[in-house]
Length: 181
Image 1 (cartoon, helix red, strand yellow):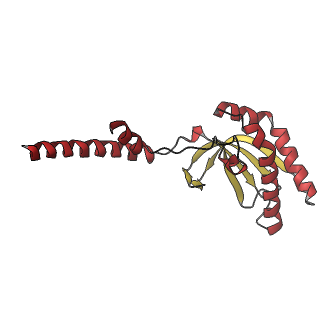
Image 2 (cartoon, helix red, strand yellow):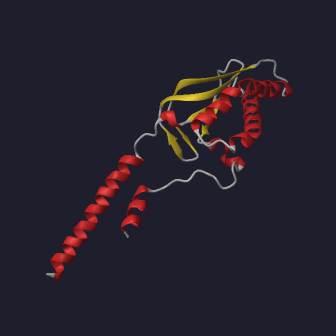
Image 3 (cartoon, helix red, strand yellow):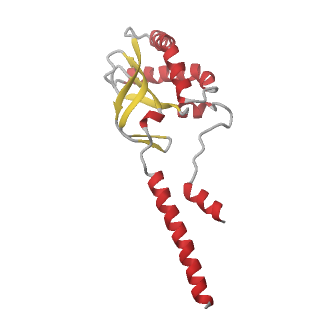
C-alpha cells in the first residue's frame, strides 16, 4: 500500500512539474511583444573605419547625455515622451560630435515605428517585428548600425543607471516550485 501511495504522490509531483514546465516553456519561448520596447538605432554613414568610429563616438555621447535622464524613467510612455521631447537635442549631440571629428555630413533624427530583424542584446533576444525606435542617421546612413533597447533601459546597464535597479530575469519554473515547496 505504501508503494502505491508513494507512486501516486510521485506521479502527482511529476504532473505538477510537467504542467509547470509546459507553462514555463510556453511563456519563456513566447516572443516578447515589440510594443513593450523602445529601440535606439544609430546608422553610420558607411562601413569605412572612420564612419564606424564616429558612429561609436555619437553613441557614447548620446548614452552619456541621457543616462541620468533615463534613471528616473519608469514606464514606456514616459520613455517615449523623453525621446520625443528631445529629438532636437539628440540631433544637436550627433551633429556636434560629427563636427568635432571633422565630418561635414549631418545627422537626422526620427522617432518612428520601423521593421527590424531579430537581434540579441546582452543575451536578451528581440524577435523580428515592428518597433518604435529613435533613429539617428549619420550622413547617408548606409553603413552598419549600432542598436540598443532604450526601454526597458538596457542601453544604460553598462552606465549603472539607477544604481542596482538593473533588469531582473525570473524563472517561472523556479517560482512554481518555490510556491509548492
